[in-house]
Every structure is written in C-alpha cells, then in structure tokens.
Image (tube, rainbow, N blue to C red):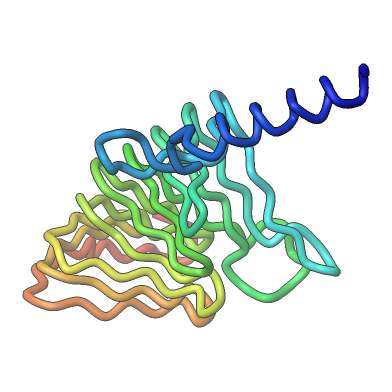
Length: 181
C-alpha cells in the first residue's frame, strides 16, 4: 500500500516538474548575462610551471563564462621572460576586462613599466603572451625627466621599445660633467 502511494506521489511530482518553468543559469529575466562568480577585494594569480606570470588585484571582480570584469584593478605582470623579480609592469585602471591573454583597461589607465616609462591614457590593450601594450587614444608619457604626448602608442616590454604617432617631445638636455654637475 505504501509503495503504491509512493509511486503515485512520484508520478504527480514528475508531471508537476515537467511543466515548471525555471530561468536559465547565468541569464536573468531581462536577458542579461549574470556572472558565474563575484568577488570583493580579490587577488587573481596566473601561474606557470616556473613562477607567477601576473597578478590581478581589484576591489570588485565578476567572473563570466567567457571573460572577467574587474573594477578599480591593478595588473602586475612580468615584463620579460626571466626570473628577475624587478622586471614587472604595473597597469591600473577603473575597469579591466580580461579575455584569455588579452586584457583591456578603461578609464584612468596608468602604465608603470619596469624600465621607468610611465604613461597615462583612457584605454589600453595588453597581451600577456607578447607583452605588448597598445592604445589608440591620447596619452601622456614620462621617462626620467623627458616627457612626450601623442595620439597612439605601442609599447613592447620584451625589448623596451615604444612606437607612437603624432608625438610631441620635451627632452631635458642637461649635460652632466664627470663630477655629476
């Protein structure tokens, strides 16, 4: 008797759940994609077999299936493929979007290179494999006491080379004698 009631209950529940409509995982009722995981005050490490390749630190992080969004974030990435811990590039921005090896920085972007180059722009694309940073927006850059501005910049941190368009330089031509004066 109890077994037949149990079978009828299972049949009734299966019919009920057959017509029950539920939302898809990761999509809300407006059709917007929801993050799979959300973090506050996060630190993300990208590890290789030898060492830490880069660190992404942020105040808020939203991890989606195909990309990551980080707010008030800083990337600390190896500039060269070496074990020297001083060869680190630091890039910070209001919004960082990461797709595999490409990281996009938006809003108040500041790039501090290991070799002393500092530039500020509104948008930047950085590839973690090639170690190349690109911007097609206006930038202001400083290295030592020399300043330059331009409309676009490509910086290869593997070789320490910058290529810019529509550039204006202000170079400090002070010459020091042998005594440093």
